[in-house]
Amino acid sequence: MNRTIGRSEGRTRTRRNLARRISGAALCASLLGCAASDPKTESTPPAWVHRTIAVGSGDSLHLAHRNLGASRALVFVPGLGDTWRSWLALVTELPDSFGIVLVDALGHGASTKRQGANGPGRQVEALSAALDSLGVEPHALIGHSYGGFIVQYYGRKRPEVPAAIIMAAGTTLRTNPAAADFRALATSMPDTVPDEVLELQRESFFGDVPDAVVRPYIDASRDTPGQVWRDVIDTLLAADTRSFLADFRPRTLLVMAENDKVVGNASMNDIVAALPAADTVRIPRTSHAMHWERPDTVAAVVLSFLGAMR
Image (cartoon, rainbow, N blue to C red; front, top):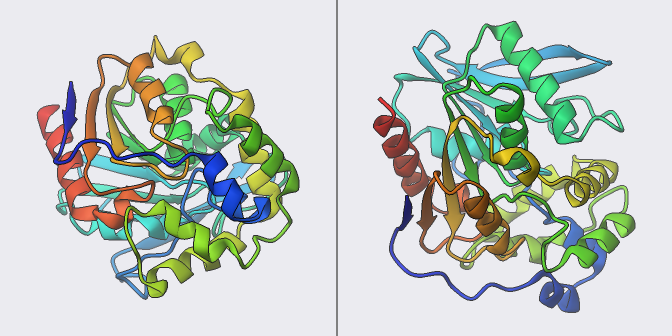
């Protein structure tokens, strides 16, 4: 089922257009996810319980959870350069009847940052081990951008998960119109995200955003080593989830931006084509960071989808 909420798709800026305006290193710092901390919440709410769980191979995964005694647990996976905090505005719109798990993927936030541990396959192994340790059988996995890739691989390995919600992701970067730019930028990405990323981070939003909102994005980006950016981009240029999506069993919701200025709307169009039975919703007046721009609208879409599964 395909739905558009509000306005039709806007004109997409390609990565090549962005590359003409800013340096390659700064461009790379916005790829596939918005590095973020919550724009509304300055400190961690008391309800969150934090755990750092050993997941093998010297890795450990940090996560925050609440209400795990609920009958349905939702697990949220952020994008490249992002952390568990990026979901706080959205989950405050959800009822307390859900258990919530917010994850720092390997290489991000308070999780370990071992080189070679950043591919989606290893991310799924780590996430599965952490959830098993908590005794959590997720009712749904929700992933944004790179987190959406991880959700696809999770659904392949753990097909018993009832639902998958994928936001602003894709099946591969290899067929992206700007694949050559992504490849070059992965090579040129420095070990620390450069200061000029501030202007580019605004491309993750549909409209103008105050510096007070953008600056935390940059702070979190700097905490993600350049090697992680390079590893993830290289992985997504090599991977192609279309090889297994034909057999994808979880019921799926695809959440699309009106005008994704970071990876372009073509990336989500690839998933729509690969999963024709999935529900598809386009959120108006959003770019890549839709869960930041319109967390209430995105939360309502998620709740409607989950409610229809009963």
